[in-house]
Length: 404
Image 1 (tube, rainbow, N blue to C red):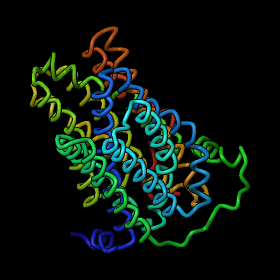
Image 2 (image 1 turned 45 degrees about the horizontal axis):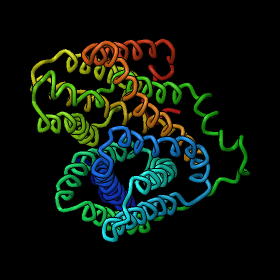
Image 3 (image 1 turned 180 degrees about the vertical axis):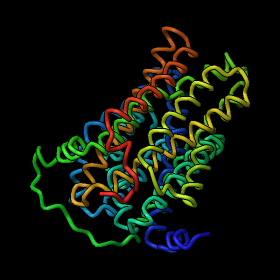
């Protein structure tokens, strides 16, 4: 273990925030599984399952820019704790709805809207607080460690939620509530010197993050690259089709397929924490996206379960290089007074790419089949990365993370 890794792990303030994120994300993943199963038990409608996601996405999208402004004016740790507290209350309400027999699809839709608003305020605060807790030299390792924690939560959260759901939805909701409360306690322990933005609340100040990203070609290239890569190369929505009709592995195999990208991301994030990128970070960012596209093509053409698993693990690993590099660049190149608003813009790109990517994959698959959808998406991702070498030369030529 290097001295810098020891220094990061010895940073008690950062580690408190790290534990809070782990608990919060794990609880959120458990909650999403429980709400989906609960809704399907109540209505038996696939359409209603889709509406649950839509009712979370729309308010999150609408509120994201003002939420970024709030993150620059408020203490970000307290804002993050407040969002966790709101989600804890949501979990307690759902717990009581089972206990007192007033659960309904309308309640779940309303809860989804509240969760979407809470997510809108949580994401920019969550992303913008890390640079206040660690030095620039530790920033890339801090992002890598945070990413590894996220992947552990993404792997364990749904599995734990599904396991507890066997004993009842109220058990899952109760466990989520207490995990959110514990995350709040860890967050309250986070201390740093808060300097609020002095800009007056206005449309122009709310749009400051958008303007900053648009004028900074390195940030614009990095964030838009992630948008198009996930938009074209995402395969999550089509995994059930591959599991059932192409690989013939059933629901058990589907679980392995869904976990494979997170496994690859976890492995890579641990590697980046130990051996962070030192030189040619822009070049490796673009190359990692090309590797992501190539692995996607392999998955799309594969008819063997092992090959498909390895391809998905490779997509997760390549994507993690992109994510860690992009987030580190965004945080280091953004002044603290607008970091919340820039993080909000980044969150919009991430949310839009995930949601629209699933829609794009499903639409193309409906017209020309799943193989064409996945392979064409992988090819498109490679072409986008190649085009970005020409369109954003400052990004492609960026050498070190800390370069101005």
